[in-house]
Length: 377
Image (cartoon, rainbow, N blue to C red; front, side, top):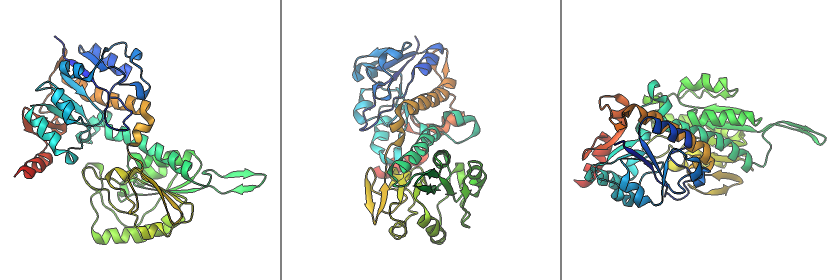
């Protein structure tokens, strides 16, 4: 009997994405599994039930979980959702385990096998599974749109009967996936773009998009494509060098986030007060507290004439394409584990071994295990 892969309706406040789209459902069925989807699960992402021709629509979450062998989620499951799952079920999605050790403990107790999409290693073989990158690209695109929307200035140069309007100057801090997409989008909108990253390896990528790379003399190459944490001396040097460029920016987009840790504070209040009136800060690191000292996550405020926007769950604002990209990431991750309609992961595979959070009553991810067991002792 083939396994049943189930997709529930997301319950997290404001979450519009869904972990499935029609073409992925069809591909899964071709691999010999049955796909179940909760009624109206894709409604907010503009995937009505009727488009899932290859899936079976289930009326309730309880009915779905009662049958599910593998559950695909976007946001972390709630404790109630975990209790409805069969003991020994598999769940795949974003977990951010450091924020919710009680969920990890419950999955351990119920012998649920969980795979965290944010733990997939950033190796070339896993690029097509990298959901952090696919969703970050959406956030970067949207950040430039938000910046232009909140700004009191045009982005492109305009020549009009009333004279010539000079283009806006956009500064992007952090040239990861989100930052590069923000640069590309701001350039397409006609702005002059500068960018800064502590990883000097990003210089070529920034310049290939038509932006100017700021070399401030602070370098912090880290593991897995991320930047390492700066020393206090390096932070001071960075802030001093950045102050001049931030003061000239019409729109500042910050994207510097470290998974599992608070976002580094790169823009103190004093720097905001040095910005021109009408300038805008779009802080994509708001989920982790923000790169700007004054950012209020989920809020848009004004300080000394500067608009500071701290958006949360930005990919959800582009729900259809975000869901489509995420569902394809899930398929690329799961398909090697599906053999003749059965779920058969290769536990020796680096991608499987590094992304598994809990399995067979054990917490497999060492940092999470140390956090949960440390909290109990």
